[in-house]
Length: 174
Ligand code: APR
Image 1 (cartoon, rainbow, N blue to C red):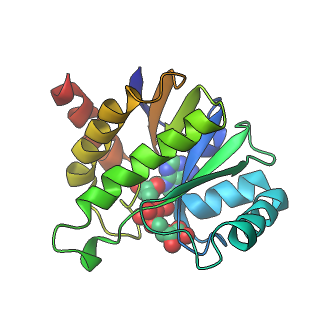
Image 2: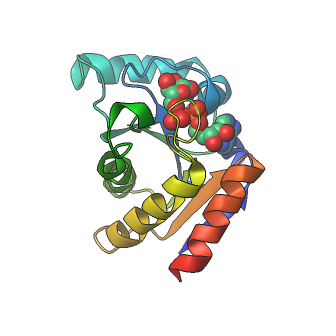
Image 3: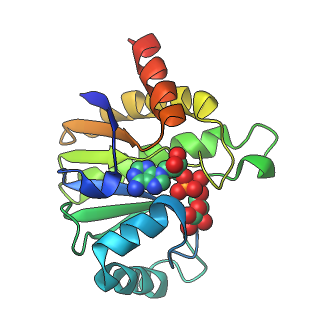
């Protein structure tokens, strides 16, 4: 089941929330900053461990990795790096889809059955949510067949523009 929710992703009562991170995994602004602030220092520590053990050169664009959720209601944070719109002729649409698909793969791997996505790449990374939403929803709908334990996916949007874009996209996808 896929739904669209207006709200703050750090307050969602789900097993896992997806973080629109940067490749350093050292935190930042936007939803990354909000998640680290709400999760507390354990999240940054877990990200430093991931960098040391798995991604010494940083998390590649489109990849995803799960860590503890720290003090969040969610047990896990799944960090992914969306494409920077200006770096690709088409904005990096395949990488945007991959970020969603790989986040669902991580959701399944850690045994989480519910997951919330923000509007990945729709802030600092320059994507227009009206362009990103159909790609995000199509990527999730297609990938869910491969991840049977993931029962519920929510797109959680904190602003009107993104909420309207994702609501429109999910209605036209049905
Ligand atoms: N809950 C839900 N959505 C949020 C929240 C929140 N608490 N805070 C921000 N957002 C929304 C933004 O309004 C935007 O629609 O998340 C979307 C993604 O925007 P960014 O957080 O800027 O992420 P992105 O565009 O992927 O850029 C990633 O920004 O914060 C830095 O460290 C991050 O360098 C990375 C870059």
